[in-house]
Amino acid sequence: MSSGKVTVRGQRRKKNHTKARLILFGALVLLLILAAIFAETLCPYDPNQQDLSAALQPPGAGHLFGTDRYGRDMLSRVIVGARVSIFSALILVAVIAAAGTLIGMICGYIQGAADSIIMRIADICLAFPGLVFALAIAAVLNGGVGNAVIALAVISWPKYARIARGQTLAVKSSEYIAAARLAGSTPLKILFCHILPNIIGPVLVTAMLDIGTMMMEIAALSFLGLGAKPPTAEWGSMMSEGRSMLQTYPWTVLTPGIAIFISVVLFNLLGDTIRDYADPGNGSRQG
Image 1 (cartoon, rainbow, N blue to C red):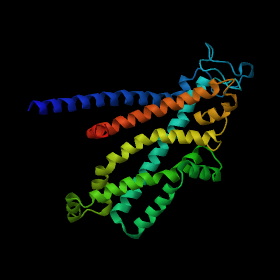
Image 2: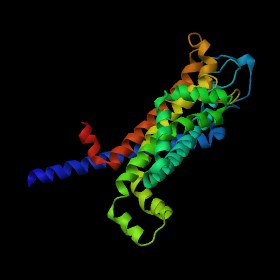
Image 3: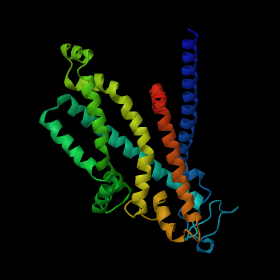
Image 4: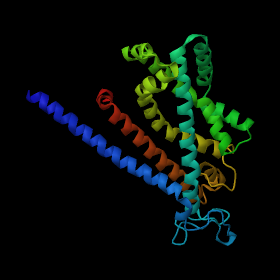
Protein backbone atom coordinates (compact mmCIF):
# COMPACT_ATOMS: atom_id res chain seq x y z
CA MET A 1 0.00 0.00 0.00
CA SER A 2 2.78 2.40 0.96
CA SER A 3 4.64 1.45 -2.21
CA GLY A 4 1.58 2.37 -4.25
CA LYS A 5 1.32 5.74 -2.49
CA VAL A 6 4.99 6.44 -3.20
CA THR A 7 4.47 5.57 -6.87
CA VAL A 8 1.42 7.83 -7.16
CA ARG A 9 3.26 10.63 -5.35
CA GLY A 10 6.24 10.25 -7.69
CA GLN A 11 4.01 10.34 -10.76
CA ARG A 12 2.25 13.44 -9.46
CA ARG A 13 5.60 15.14 -8.77
CA LYS A 14 6.83 14.25 -12.26
CA LYS A 15 3.60 15.57 -13.80
CA ASN A 16 3.94 18.86 -11.91
CA HIS A 17 7.58 19.16 -12.99
CA THR A 18 6.61 18.58 -16.62
CA LYS A 19 3.81 21.15 -16.30
CA ALA A 20 6.26 23.71 -14.89
CA ARG A 21 8.64 23.08 -17.80
CA LEU A 22 5.74 23.40 -20.22
CA ILE A 23 4.80 26.80 -18.78
CA LEU A 24 8.42 27.99 -18.82
CA PHE A 25 9.25 26.94 -22.37
CA GLY A 26 5.82 28.01 -23.61
CA ALA A 27 6.38 31.49 -22.15
CA LEU A 28 9.84 31.75 -23.72
CA VAL A 29 8.54 30.68 -27.14
CA LEU A 30 5.66 33.14 -26.79
CA LEU A 31 8.15 35.94 -26.04
CA LEU A 32 10.13 34.91 -29.11
CA ILE A 33 7.02 35.06 -31.30
CA LEU A 34 5.94 38.41 -29.80
CA ALA A 35 9.43 39.79 -30.49
CA ALA A 36 9.03 38.69 -34.12
CA ILE A 37 5.57 40.29 -34.36
CA PHE A 38 6.73 43.62 -32.92
CA ALA A 39 10.19 43.46 -34.51
CA GLU A 40 10.04 46.88 -36.14
CA THR A 41 9.10 48.50 -32.84
CA LEU A 42 11.94 46.78 -30.97
CA CYS A 43 14.65 47.66 -33.50
CA PRO A 44 17.01 50.41 -32.27
CA TYR A 45 17.89 51.30 -35.89
CA ASP A 46 16.42 50.94 -39.35
CA PRO A 47 17.54 47.40 -40.31
CA ASN A 48 18.02 48.35 -43.96
CA GLN A 49 19.66 51.74 -43.43
CA GLN A 50 23.21 51.67 -44.85
CA ASP A 51 26.03 53.73 -43.35
CA LEU A 52 29.36 52.84 -44.96
CA SER A 53 31.24 55.05 -42.51
CA ALA A 54 30.10 52.69 -39.72
CA ALA A 55 30.76 49.46 -41.64
CA LEU A 56 32.00 46.39 -39.75
CA GLN A 57 32.06 48.01 -36.34
CA PRO A 58 32.55 45.46 -33.54
CA PRO A 59 29.88 44.99 -30.88
CA GLY A 60 29.84 47.94 -28.52
CA ALA A 61 27.71 50.60 -26.87
CA GLY A 62 26.47 52.11 -30.14
CA HIS A 63 25.74 48.79 -31.83
CA LEU A 64 25.34 45.93 -29.36
CA PHE A 65 25.81 43.26 -32.06
CA GLY A 66 28.09 45.34 -34.28
CA THR A 67 27.43 46.27 -37.90
CA ASP A 68 27.73 44.44 -41.22
CA ARG A 69 29.74 45.36 -44.31
CA TYR A 70 27.18 48.02 -45.28
CA GLY A 71 27.06 49.59 -41.82
CA ARG A 72 23.64 48.15 -41.00
CA ASP A 73 22.96 47.44 -37.34
CA MET A 74 23.20 43.67 -36.74
CA LEU A 75 20.90 43.69 -33.71
CA SER A 76 18.12 45.34 -35.72
CA ARG A 77 18.59 42.90 -38.58
CA VAL A 78 18.56 39.89 -36.24
CA ILE A 79 15.33 41.11 -34.62
CA VAL A 80 13.64 41.75 -37.99
CA GLY A 81 15.05 38.49 -39.34
CA ALA A 82 13.12 36.63 -36.63
CA ARG A 83 9.89 37.54 -38.39
CA VAL A 84 10.89 35.84 -41.64
CA SER A 85 12.72 32.89 -40.08
CA ILE A 86 10.18 32.00 -37.40
CA PHE A 87 6.95 32.71 -39.28
CA SER A 88 8.17 30.91 -42.40
CA ALA A 89 8.81 27.81 -40.28
CA LEU A 90 5.43 28.11 -38.52
CA ILE A 91 3.55 28.51 -41.80
CA LEU A 92 5.46 25.61 -43.35
CA VAL A 93 4.73 23.26 -40.44
CA ALA A 94 1.06 24.29 -40.41
CA VAL A 95 0.72 23.59 -44.15
CA ILE A 96 2.47 20.20 -44.17
CA ALA A 97 0.73 19.07 -40.98
CA ALA A 98 -2.72 20.00 -42.31
CA ALA A 99 -2.16 18.63 -45.83
CA GLY A 100 -0.40 15.45 -44.68
CA THR A 101 -3.01 14.71 -42.02
CA LEU A 102 -5.88 15.20 -44.46
CA ILE A 103 -4.25 12.95 -47.08
CA GLY A 104 -3.40 10.30 -44.49
CA MET A 105 -6.93 10.27 -43.03
CA ILE A 106 -8.54 9.89 -46.45
CA CYS A 107 -6.12 7.13 -47.47
CA GLY A 108 -6.56 5.27 -44.22
CA TYR A 109 -10.34 5.50 -44.30
CA ILE A 110 -10.95 4.72 -47.98
CA GLN A 111 -7.89 2.53 -48.73
CA GLY A 112 -8.00 0.79 -52.13
CA ALA A 113 -6.06 1.82 -55.23
CA ALA A 114 -5.93 5.53 -54.35
CA ASP A 115 -4.33 4.71 -51.01
CA SER A 116 -1.69 2.52 -52.67
CA ILE A 117 -0.80 5.14 -55.28
CA ILE A 118 -0.55 8.03 -52.80
CA MET A 119 1.50 6.00 -50.33
CA ARG A 120 3.91 4.97 -53.10
CA ILE A 121 4.34 8.66 -53.95
CA ALA A 122 5.01 9.29 -50.27
CA ASP A 123 7.61 6.49 -50.30
CA ILE A 124 9.35 8.13 -53.27
CA CYS A 125 9.49 11.48 -51.44
CA LEU A 126 10.87 9.79 -48.32
CA ALA A 127 13.45 7.86 -50.34
CA PHE A 128 15.29 11.03 -51.39
CA PRO A 129 17.53 12.92 -48.94
CA GLY A 130 15.15 15.66 -47.85
CA LEU A 131 17.35 18.74 -48.12
CA VAL A 132 18.88 17.61 -51.43
CA PHE A 133 15.37 17.17 -52.90
CA ALA A 134 14.36 20.59 -51.52
CA LEU A 135 17.47 22.18 -53.07
CA ALA A 136 16.51 20.82 -56.48
CA ILE A 137 12.92 22.06 -56.22
CA ALA A 138 13.93 25.49 -54.86
CA ALA A 139 16.46 25.87 -57.69
CA VAL A 140 13.76 25.12 -60.28
CA LEU A 141 11.50 27.72 -58.62
CA ASN A 142 14.31 30.34 -58.68
CA GLY A 143 14.59 30.76 -54.92
CA GLY A 144 12.85 33.18 -52.59
CA VAL A 145 11.38 32.55 -49.13
CA GLY A 146 7.99 31.55 -50.52
CA ASN A 147 9.53 29.11 -52.99
CA ALA A 148 11.77 27.69 -50.24
CA VAL A 149 8.66 26.99 -48.15
CA ILE A 150 6.98 25.34 -51.15
CA ALA A 151 10.07 23.21 -51.82
CA LEU A 152 10.20 21.98 -48.23
CA ALA A 153 6.44 21.40 -48.16
CA VAL A 154 6.66 19.13 -51.21
CA ILE A 155 9.09 16.79 -49.45
CA SER A 156 7.79 17.03 -45.86
CA TRP A 157 4.11 16.10 -46.00
CA PRO A 158 4.58 12.27 -46.26
CA LYS A 159 5.63 11.96 -42.61
CA TYR A 160 2.32 13.41 -41.43
CA ALA A 161 0.38 11.40 -44.00
CA ARG A 162 1.88 8.17 -42.68
CA ILE A 163 1.18 9.08 -39.05
CA ALA A 164 -2.42 10.05 -39.82
CA ARG A 165 -2.98 6.97 -41.98
CA GLY A 166 -1.67 4.60 -39.31
CA GLN A 167 -3.78 6.25 -36.62
CA THR A 168 -6.86 6.23 -38.87
CA LEU A 169 -6.47 2.51 -39.61
CA ALA A 170 -6.31 1.84 -35.88
CA VAL A 171 -9.32 4.01 -35.05
CA LYS A 172 -11.73 3.26 -37.90
CA SER A 173 -12.44 -0.27 -36.67
CA SER A 174 -13.55 1.05 -33.26
CA GLU A 175 -17.09 0.53 -32.03
CA TYR A 176 -17.93 4.22 -31.91
CA ILE A 177 -17.05 4.55 -35.61
CA ALA A 178 -19.38 1.64 -36.39
CA ALA A 179 -22.07 3.32 -34.28
CA ALA A 180 -21.57 6.58 -36.19
CA ARG A 181 -22.06 4.72 -39.49
CA LEU A 182 -25.24 3.09 -38.19
CA ALA A 183 -26.47 6.53 -37.09
CA GLY A 184 -26.18 7.70 -40.71
CA SER A 185 -23.07 9.87 -40.41
CA THR A 186 -21.44 10.70 -43.73
CA PRO A 187 -17.80 9.73 -44.33
CA LEU A 188 -16.88 13.43 -44.13
CA LYS A 189 -18.51 13.78 -40.71
CA ILE A 190 -16.88 10.58 -39.49
CA LEU A 191 -13.46 11.80 -40.63
CA PHE A 192 -13.62 15.27 -39.08
CA CYS A 193 -15.91 14.73 -36.06
CA HIS A 194 -14.91 11.25 -34.90
CA ILE A 195 -11.52 10.26 -36.32
CA LEU A 196 -9.62 13.57 -36.40
CA PRO A 197 -10.12 14.43 -32.68
CA ASN A 198 -8.76 11.01 -31.74
CA ILE A 199 -5.62 11.13 -33.90
CA ILE A 200 -4.67 14.80 -33.61
CA GLY A 201 -2.43 14.32 -30.54
CA PRO A 202 0.51 12.55 -32.25
CA VAL A 203 0.24 14.93 -35.21
CA LEU A 204 0.48 18.04 -33.00
CA VAL A 205 3.44 16.64 -31.06
CA THR A 206 5.23 15.82 -34.32
CA ALA A 207 4.48 19.31 -35.65
CA MET A 208 5.93 20.98 -32.54
CA LEU A 209 9.09 18.90 -32.82
CA ASP A 210 9.31 19.77 -36.53
CA ILE A 211 9.35 23.56 -36.14
CA GLY A 212 13.02 23.71 -35.19
CA THR A 213 13.98 21.34 -38.00
CA MET A 214 12.10 23.38 -40.60
CA MET A 215 13.63 26.59 -39.29
CA MET A 216 17.11 25.15 -39.85
CA GLU A 217 16.22 23.87 -43.32
CA ILE A 218 14.80 27.25 -44.38
CA ALA A 219 17.98 28.88 -43.07
CA ALA A 220 20.07 26.31 -44.98
CA LEU A 221 18.29 27.10 -48.26
CA SER A 222 18.78 30.82 -47.65
CA PHE A 223 22.45 30.24 -46.78
CA LEU A 224 22.88 28.52 -50.15
CA GLY A 225 21.17 31.39 -51.98
CA LEU A 226 17.86 29.61 -52.60
CA GLY A 227 15.81 31.28 -49.90
CA ALA A 228 15.50 34.91 -48.83
CA LYS A 229 17.01 37.45 -51.23
CA PRO A 230 18.92 40.61 -50.20
CA PRO A 231 18.17 43.02 -48.67
CA THR A 232 15.60 40.92 -46.79
CA ALA A 233 16.85 40.21 -43.28
CA GLU A 234 16.75 36.45 -42.72
CA TRP A 235 19.11 34.57 -40.43
CA GLY A 236 20.35 32.06 -43.01
CA SER A 237 21.02 34.70 -45.68
CA MET A 238 22.71 36.93 -43.08
CA MET A 239 25.12 34.11 -42.25
CA SER A 240 25.76 33.61 -45.97
CA GLU A 241 26.54 37.31 -46.46
CA GLY A 242 29.12 37.26 -43.66
CA ARG A 243 30.68 33.81 -44.14
CA SER A 244 33.74 35.19 -45.96
CA MET A 245 34.44 37.40 -42.93
CA LEU A 246 34.10 34.74 -40.24
CA GLN A 247 37.74 34.97 -39.15
CA THR A 248 38.08 38.74 -39.36
CA TYR A 249 34.59 39.97 -38.39
CA PRO A 250 32.99 36.95 -36.67
CA TRP A 251 29.96 38.82 -35.29
CA THR A 252 28.50 39.09 -38.82
CA VAL A 253 28.03 35.30 -38.79
CA LEU A 254 27.80 34.45 -35.10
CA THR A 255 24.90 36.77 -34.20
CA PRO A 256 22.36 35.28 -36.67
CA GLY A 257 23.81 31.82 -35.96
CA ILE A 258 23.22 32.22 -32.22
CA ALA A 259 19.68 33.47 -32.96
CA ILE A 260 18.98 30.29 -34.96
CA PHE A 261 20.50 28.15 -32.20
CA ILE A 262 18.43 29.72 -29.40
CA SER A 263 15.18 29.60 -31.40
CA VAL A 264 15.63 25.97 -32.46
CA VAL A 265 16.55 24.89 -28.92
CA LEU A 266 13.48 26.62 -27.45
CA PHE A 267 11.07 25.09 -29.95
CA ASN A 268 12.65 21.64 -29.51
CA LEU A 269 12.46 21.87 -25.72
CA LEU A 270 8.82 22.93 -25.96
CA GLY A 271 8.06 20.05 -28.33
CA ASP A 272 9.79 17.53 -26.05
CA THR A 273 7.90 18.86 -23.04
CA ILE A 274 4.55 18.69 -24.84
CA ARG A 275 5.32 15.09 -25.80
CA ASP A 276 6.17 14.23 -22.19
CA TYR A 277 3.05 16.00 -20.91
CA ALA A 278 0.80 14.25 -23.43
CA ASP A 279 2.37 10.85 -22.71
CA PRO A 280 3.73 10.81 -19.12
CA GLY A 281 4.94 7.22 -19.49
CA ASN A 282 7.12 8.08 -22.48
CA GLY A 283 9.96 9.54 -20.43
CA SER A 284 10.08 6.56 -18.07
CA ARG A 285 10.11 4.11 -20.96
CA GLN A 286 12.94 5.99 -22.63
CA GLY A 287 14.90 6.13 -19.38
